Length: 442
Image 1 (cartoon, helix red, strand yellow):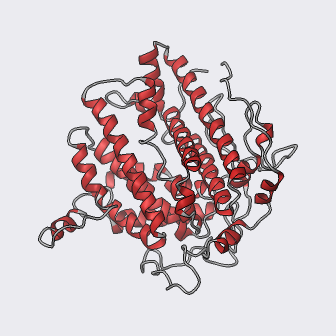
Image 2 (cartoon, one colour):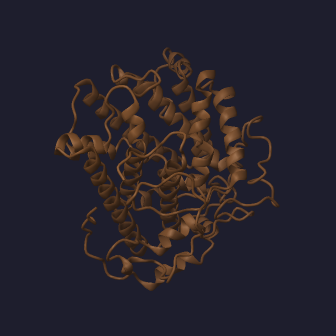
Image 3 (cartoon, helix red, strand yellow):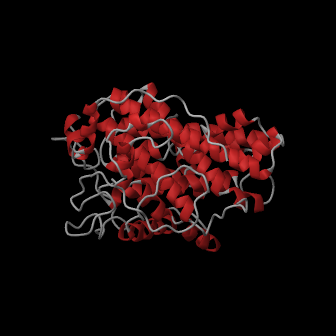
């Protein structure tokens, strides 16, 4: 398979950037912005509302006990260190011509090799990471199932095997290695499950349809971005938030998130969820018209219908805040977009055979390339791998350049958090053999 052409290397980064690798980033970044690491509070501020009694009241064996073993990259005291997912960005890009972009020069990578299940896509540029901490995985899995069943009545009994097979606890623990507690991990886990419920029940194979999708998404979005209307009609809207499982899940997950996040973090998530819903609508329009878009059009849609809401909350899950003015920087927005686009192509590649076996035509990048560019299924798949790799190299190059141009501790930690999410997302896709298998192209 030909190696994709990469942009020319950038100049070496300043040596000062290496200090990101030796600082207790959580504490220092928090102090720099007057924050503590406990759910984004600050000295002298009111104590945040405690987790609800019941599901979250019991101690987590891996997050709340001072003597408990820590998750990958997070010591027992909750202060983040440079674990395998976090150190990878410090090592910088590993593609052709990118040696000068590394933040810390090493002769050999220091990250431990994971005990992997499943087979990675041959030729796919990715980073091997440690298996998620099993204690945290078990606790998050227990809590999320209790939330799904007891709090929001998310799914009927016959869907239980699919819920368990999704392995969302393992997914989120692997994607957020710097989360200080299981409570923080649960913020991401509820949102992930709620987003998948909307996708499955509104768009995909559990009753979804492109017909009427706009109305359903709009009403569900008001569970994230509350309606402010006249008194006469406010009760009708409030009652609608419990009308179906996706809205119940959105409402509850967002309620937990808002109580833990800073206002700018919650607003950022609402914005990215609106982007996601816009992408759903574009794909639905193509389905209604039985239209296969051009490749560039599909990639444009995938910049909206992608995983972006997940890495964008990495600071909230990490227990700190990336200030709004820094998050809004065009170069940081580009990094988030590239990471999100790459992770979504990972999903296209690993779910390829699953979608081919499903009823109807499911658009993914290999299918669109084969249709629009007249390639065989195999060649279209291999070209999709090349596109993913180019996005990944560009993400790493842009992230390294941003870390040098903006040497703010919260920026460095956020970039490492996004990189850890990218790696954890790939590891989950590769190892979730319940859901995914590779095509027989090799």
